[in-house]
Length: 469
Image 1 (cartoon, rainbow, N blue to C red):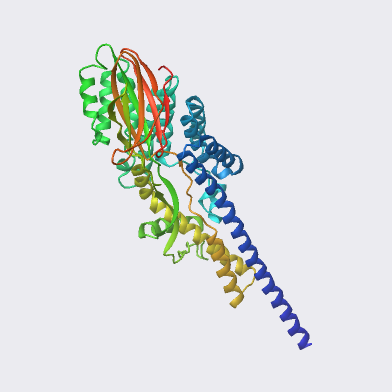
Image 2: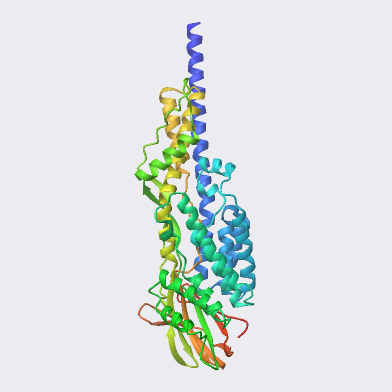
């Protein structure tokens, strides 16, 4: 009888041990599958970026379309990049339509999606619906204006107003969250008011509006040297000299910021935010109705996104008119700075979410172990393996608009009425010429604006002239 009970206990212990090992094995398999599933879209997006940089537009488009169709979590970033491909391909109307649809879609996404928030706590932030970073939301509207300028110009001014309004909204929301120096972090992006200024100036009536827009640009980007001349010109109510028109070369230069995964230390500020969040999420009460204190895990680092700037040789775009060098574009907006500034400001919340996620997983594993009656070495083995593997499956959310440029640059040319031939060249940091475009023919009209868009992620150059030329 005693021998029978002993044998039964051994069998139970063996079955329990087998169950634990099967569970650990399953978690390991899930971890491997999860990592493979996450890496594939990243590789495809990386490949698409490189193809675009080297002038292979159709191959880049095909790679992005594949991500869009097969990877729902990454479809929106892929679509944002597709809009850049369409603009570079000379399809500004298609790019405008795509960006407009994305703008409306992002505006409809609720601030809090409870179901996906719960899923993200069990996996990582890539489970959440993709939301553009604040600077990306403003640039969506600014790029819409560029697309409009490149074809019908009907809604260009409206898009600039939307961009400026979105920037103000972001600053207000950040102040409500208690973000320090929100106005500085979400200060106006100079590109939008600059476009607003040139469009107001082109009416030959609204010079006061143009002057206010240019003044805002001078406050945000005082290093943009042409702005002084712009303010002076409109102050005297002049668009251009008689029998002259204006050509604006709008250049998107360099490879823009992307996000890569890195380990960040858990700061005091982040842990304080995490503690508040966790107490609300996992609130438990003792017999007297008092809320129990939940201990945060002892974490030194967590996985977070980090801004990285891919290397690029192009510094600016040189311009020749009728065979004569006339100047080069100058930086109006530094997108790398925008991305870095916002990411750093949001980092305490990003780290806090990672800490809360890790704590939630450890609490879940502990409760599961307890409910299964796993004690001693089996319980410890289960908790260690399950927590380690589950947390090891996490990835930082590095989804972003990866085909944005490093900088937005502008050159204003006032030219006599008539037909002119423009040649654009990608210039290096020592003004060495890498690539020269095919001649661009522009028919300058008296008192009118004309627009040429240049996209140069590196030495390769894409050019688009507005249809009125």
